[in-house]
Amino acid sequence: EVQLVESGGGLVQPGRSLRLSCAASGFTFHDYAMHWVRQAPGEGLEWVSGITWNSGSIGYAASVKGRFTISRDNANNSLYLQMNSLRAEDTALYYCVKDVTFDSRGFDYWGQGTLVTVSS
Amino acid sequence: EIVMTQSPATLSVSPGERATLSCRASQSVSSNLAWYQQRPGQAPRLLIYDASTRATGLPARFSGGGSGTEFTLTISSLQSEDFAVYYCQQYNNWPVTFGGGTKVEI
Image 1: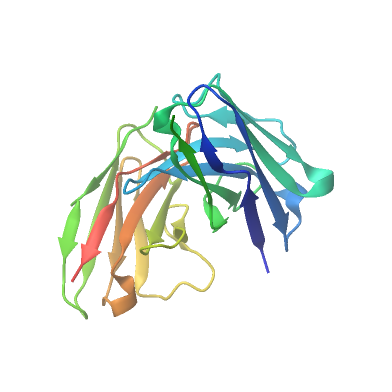
Image 2: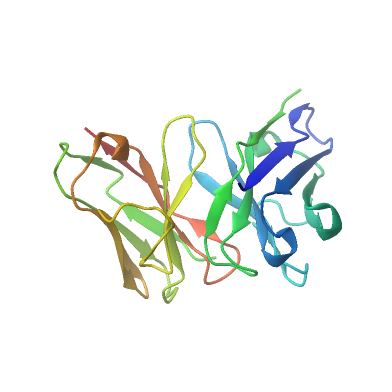
């Protein structure tokens, strides 16, 4: 059974940093691209960042480029999102998401999310 | 960035009726389009990818079509569990972008 378990969310002040982690199990992690998708309270879905199977391609939404960094550790089946210079508008539920394939072809498994609240 | 526009924003239908949801891309995404369902309090669920390929275990009442810039998701006979919000997503180019969603309500 595929499982994606996010951690690292919480309440943080504007301008501070937070690191999200995602522990993956139940599939061959290094064969698939992975993504972070967020959803602000009562809003729609926003792709934050993605990384291909071998970290050869990495992408970011314009809203987070230069502030967030995605990475993966294939040896430990883990995905990360380093979030710096956090803003109030980064407040959202952050989902760790598995891709259908090694690069980008739809997101077939989602974690339950970790809530990030940016507020003073 | 490719902008995805979904219509209508809200679709009111009765159980057993057919529902057709639309999604338009601001430029061609070929067939690199997916549909997701999100029920309240739950994570999204993949329904369709590559514009028309059903995800594993998806009931046959769900079907996707289109290519280029115009896409549709059809639910042939709505069941109670189908009342939810539906999102389209393009993955032809990064950044990946989602539509704003269509809420299917009773």
